[in-house]
Structure formats: C-alpha cells, structure tokens
Length: 208
Ligand SMILES: Cc1ncc(COP(=O)(O)OP(=O)(O)O)c(N)n1
Ligand SMILES: Cc1nc(C(=O)O)sc1CCOP(=O)(O)O
Ligand SMILES: [Mg+2]
Image 1 (tube, helix red, strand yellow):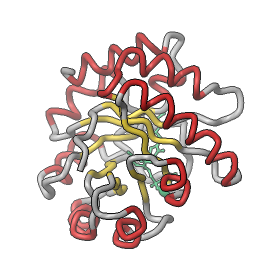
Image 2 (cartoon, helix red, strand yellow):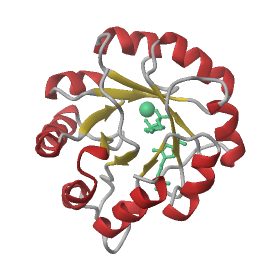
Image 3 (cartoon, protein in one colour):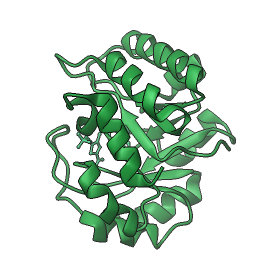
C-alpha cells in the first residue's frame, strides 16, 4: 500500500471556486506530500466527476502526489486514482475494499472509536475523523468532536487518522498532539487569498 501524505486537499467545486487553479498552487508547494481528494457536489454528473478526476490524476502524477476520489469508486478506477474515500452514505467499507482491490488506498469516515474499529477491520487504510471544528463547507454534520474526539479514535486504531472539519494551520498542533497523522482541508486552502502560502503554513504546522 502506498505511504500516505499528511496534508489532504479536498477539491472545492462549489460555484465560484476554481479547484484546478488552487490545486496547481498547492501541488507546487506540497508536491508528493499532498493527497488530493476529488470531491464533487452530489448533483454533479459522473461525467463531470470523471473529467475533473482525470485532470487531477494528471496533475498529481507530475509531483508524485496521491489522488483519491470521494464516494464514486467507479470514477476512481476509471481514472487510475490511488484509491477512494467512503462514509456512512456510501458503499460499506468492505464492499469498497472489494471494488478497489487489496492494494488501493481506502479512507473511511469515523466519528467515534467503535465505527473506527469496524472500518479498519473491514479494510480501511486510513480514517477521516471529524468534524473537529465548526465548518461552513458542509451542512448536516454533527457537533464538532474537537481534539478529544480525535484522540479517542486515534487511541483505538493503528491506521493513520486524518482530522477534518474547520482545520486551519493554527488548529493543527492540537490535532497532531491528539494523535492525528494528518489533516484534510477544503476552506483553509481553497478559501485563502494565497493558496500556496496557506499550503506552506499547513505543512509547517504538520512539521513536514
Ligand atoms: C478525509 C475525509 N474525511 C471525511 C470525509 C467525509 O466523507 P463522507 O462522510 O462520506 O461525506 P462526503 O465527503 O461524501 O460528503 C471526507 N470526504 N474525507
Ligand atoms: C467534506 C467534509 N466532511 C467532513 C466530516 O466531518 O465528515 S467536514 C468536511 C468539510 C471540510 O471542509 P473545511 O476544511 O472547509 O472545514
Ligand atoms: Mg461520502
């Protein structure tokens, strides 16, 4: 299984955002340390997801960075991504593992230790854990679990824990101290005036 980067950038495809421009800026700074998760809005077509994902795979390949695809595992396979990420509304982790194969990177969302242990037993190779802090990027989330919630999950599993939800560079040290291996962000990079600088700040906070 490929080693996992510690900074995960999730594409922001909301209206007015320019995910590929943001990605180019982030890749130039983070290079192989970056994991890019292609996440499109639920109303996007598979063709739109495919078109974005194949462009992201090509950009990542220039830097030896990792591309994952959120939810749509057939798109991950179609574009030759390194793997995918699933949550409670997606294929179960075991089924996702069967789809992607034994060597793919497979992330699963876990908000508590019990779910985390089950996800790892079913084949998850890392866990997305959150929401750590309040976020306006995604609606319908439960209350933030904070660093203590991250610690509870990290103590229960032996795969990398990637903290997500309202993560900024300033919040990274407490999350790492709680056992997070890495962080996943949307707004901290996509919403920054200078995405390259924001990427550098996140990497610095991670100690990369
Ligand atoms: C790294 C990471 N962690 C959690 C999620 C959330 O996945 P999910 O719960 O399936 O929600 P959607 O992203 O599909 O709306 C994630 N994408 N990445
Ligand atoms: C896509 C997503 N999933 C979350 C979860 O907790 O499952 S939080 C989130 C959005 C993260 O965006 P930002 O970095 O802008 O807060
Ligand atoms: Mg999902």
